[in-house]
Image (tube, rainbow, N blue to C red; front, side, top):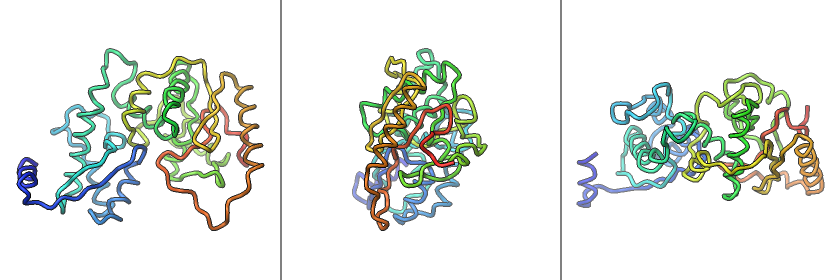
Length: 275
């Protein structure tokens, strides 16, 4: 790496850039790198399963893949870069930006737990000012041993992405998976995406609220509730709004988003979803 850096500095190496948005999973990154002509998706996935603890001894011992620890950012790399070089650069960026935020004596979460929680916050949050509120809901549920009931974890476990037109079904929410936080208490076994610094900070410093639920309005904002009764009323209101909204053109497709707003944080499958 030092030799490459010197050559870049001296103008001997052609550079190219890539950008990984906040909230992307390793699978999304793999697809992107292949479509952009960097290397194949399989080559990148293989590189993310070889945990480089010799270079990065801070990586959690239980990791089987680097999901969540490849920091989302814009990078400059030499043309012909290898997947291993990209993975190393992204881990170095995590080490520089994210790792100093985690002080073990000041948080109840281990490094892996923190990044896992932040990844869920990242997938749920669209509006910046709501991140601490979303984090507060999950923090309170963890403290009170209430299932997180986070839709993005179910999507991750099933390898799908719901949309307004195709929300999660009861059958999908009831499908057993290590990542199904409707069924399993606590956090999933690994992060589900790469969180940015805002979600990482919010997960360490959630807002002080009594909220236990939130419901997406599908415009990027959420309705936050303290009780199940309030939450059911919020879901009914969102259902009414959706029913009153004209259906999109059959040819229209939802814009790709690493943090698609979805209904979340309910201890039972959302009532606005078909059986």
